Length: 267
Image (cartoon, rainbow, N blue to C red; front, side, top):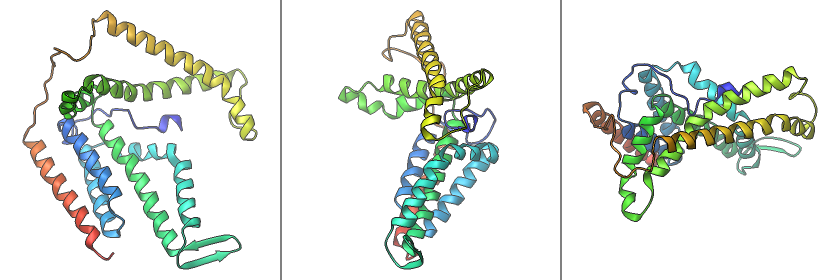
């Protein structure tokens, strides 16, 4: 399951989505995530599905590779759906003892499941089609106006980029440690919840040590290269909008307007 985490990974392939400016992809991701929270209608989710499927098709990232990232949120998905399904009052459609399912609960649970799935896939699509360096530059340029208020934009963008880059590294490190501990007789599957928690200690201790060692090596490397923040730094590949980005923004605004209009529909 650890290798199924797709957020933070980059899938190298030539595609129209890969060729877009990272600022366009950041804005598109934010608008898409916002649109998921602003609609509760069937028509809205149909439009969101068509938009997401189209983006996945254009990205040329294998659908199986993108969907496997959902395995990491199965527990969260089941809990969210269960709470909404059994605890939402309304018109009863099934009742057995203390189990009560209403039509409103069924709709809310369904929308919640779709929303969580689309949130993960939409976020993964951005990181899979954008390199960490490009993502850092895009965040810094997008939040550049906050420098007037004394916000360290470059440092924030750098920290977010490093955090995203460390996700696949730590996942791979965890997988190696688990295999090494299993070869020494450790069992991470058997027993109850408390026993499984105790079995995680031989995994967490070396993982934290490895994470701190990598962080120290990264800090030393940045100091050796005379890194002193974003002041006066130039870019090897400056960001520039192209005709593709302008077309993408037009499509985004049309999509967001359609999602806003779905709130006026009765279904």
